[in-house]
Length: 477
Image (tube, rainbow, N blue to C red; front, side, top):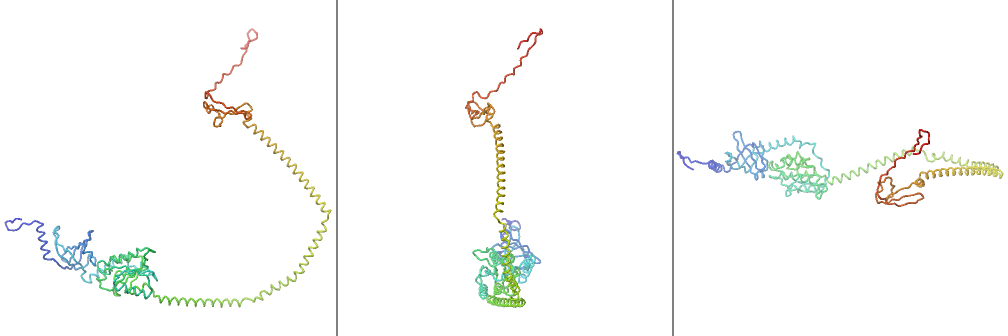
């Protein structure tokens, strides 16, 4: 540094920025500011950058990742908050900013406004529609409870279930207040839904999200969007039992059923076993009385029908009379039938004389002899015809057989493979040939000289005779 004529010290930009930074931090080391959140930015680093403003000024703010994770509420644009932190500068951009250490809503009115805005947004998405709500099972086998394991809420639920109808209960421990409450409750709902049906751990048939009463800030975790969406996406029917009767959270709107208290949630989840026993007994008595009345009604109806039927004696009287009449007629009819058959038998016996039998036997014998003679003639003629056809076929076979050709002086030449030789090229030099002759005789020959062309001699001219002109005999040439 050097001094000029007016005794001002010359500073570098970094030196001046450092002095300003120390001055601001020493003067405003710890401040509390109230204002409305403007632009809110959440980069991948996990830090939160935002503006806090009023009607006249804007202040840049930053909240480091560790602080942001501990917030019980999420900063949103338009929310009026009270910020606590320290004022510092950011030399890289020549501006000052507030490093926030804590953030809280500026009164219950701000939280209610935020709650109302979030409720409208989620309702517009259809998460609160009655059409998507699932019916509760009448008698669940397993009940999943999402609550703090050390509070009085779980004891009240277990006690009420034991009094009404004991069921198997699975408890998913979560924090029901604080900055991690919303995330843990949402993961618990998703975790119960992820359990496989029929697995080692029984999948609940109904879920209960429970917490005791508290202020709006204490119950704020159940107003977070992540919890509402997890409840709306649950495949298992869900009962919301957060706070007392006058407490209302957004989870109540997304749940399939709202209970005013955790104890009431247990009453909604299961019926009273004693009431069921009484009701079952009443149904049994009613069923017995109804069956008795039905049987009596059928008995009376059957008795009335029986009175309208005729007596058995009256029904059988006519058939019995008819049977008696037929029985009386049966004896005479049998005797008449015997007499008729005896007369026919006598007539037939009279016609059966030895002479008639001899005549009939002679006629039958003559007919049999005639048929036998005709059969012999037909058999002889048939044999002669078949013999002639067989001899003709034998002659034709002999003519067509190669044996007849061999008898005329021809020979059948076979090569070493037993195949006929039709061309000279099929008999190579030095190969053996089998020559078949007539009378089943054969010769074996060896080929020498290979295939040779056949030279045909020129045809001889016929001799001609010329007569001399002088009339003498000509000479034969």
